Each structure stands twice: as structure tokens, then as C-alpha cells.
Image (cartoon, rainbow, N blue to C red; front, side, top):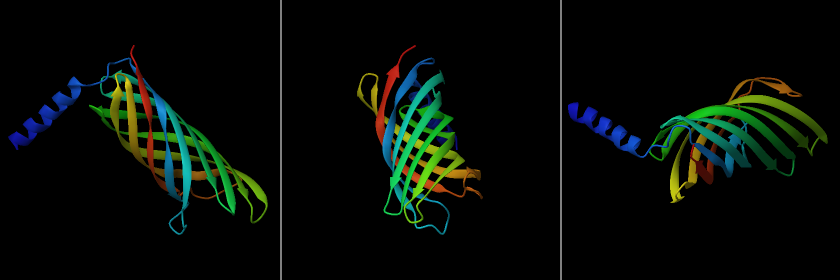
Length: 179
């Protein structure tokens, strides 16, 4: 037990030696694919996902994030264009991180089968984990996976419980700006 506690304390000490400075910022974002289901009975879709974000370190390991989101899905029967805004936080263990965020999203849905256009709004919670790989001093490749879950009820032209869930794999760039 003592060896385990010593190992964990040593890892936190080593990770904190490579921490970002308080007051520094990470600016960048990711792009990738998302595999989502509207509910448990849905067949699911694959979407293109663009996810710019700005992070500010309130201490060497904790970053608060401002998030923008653009998502595009096209199929023979339906086109969806969604845009969102959110806030979250990440905890860094050296260049590894884990975090969570909340996003509010509005979508425009064009159904080719019924020739109708609808709008929806929804709230989502996200759990995420990633890794920053330094390519140049202050420039990182960001590999992230996250799980998105719908919260509450849909708004706009749609009604009912938001049971949407998705898993996304994103790759992007982050640039560190010192204070």
C-alpha cells in the first residue's frame, strides 16, 4: 500500500514538473468523425465534426475551455447542419488530459424524404480524454476521444427527451500562448 501511494505521489510530482504555466492559453481545435445514435433503437450515423476551442490555465494543471462546434451530416434522406457553443474544463497530467464540458447546440434539419425543414435545440454533456504531442515548442498535435450524451428535452420544432449519444475521435492542433 505504501509503495502504491509513493508511486502515485511520484507520478503527480513528475507530471507537475512539465505542467503549463498559470495564465497561459491553448488556442486551436480538432476535426474528426463522430458516430452517433439518436436513441437506442436508431441505426446511427457518421458525422464530420469541427471543434475549435480556447483554453485558459487557472493553475498549472487546470484549464477552463470556451468551445465552438460545427457538425455536418449528409445522407440521401437527410442533411443536418448544427452549431454549438459551450464551456468546460480539463485537468492535465503532463500532456495527457481528462475533462468535461456542457454544450448548447442548434441544428437545421432538411428531410429529403418528406421535403421538410425543421430546427432543433438541445443541451449536451461531454466526457473527454486526450493527449498533446509536442511538434514544436508551444505547438502540439491534439488527439482526443470523447463521449457525448444528450441532456433534458429537445427544443425548437422537435419535442421529447434528448437521448442522443455519440463517441467521437478527433485530431487537431493546439498552440500555447504564454502569459
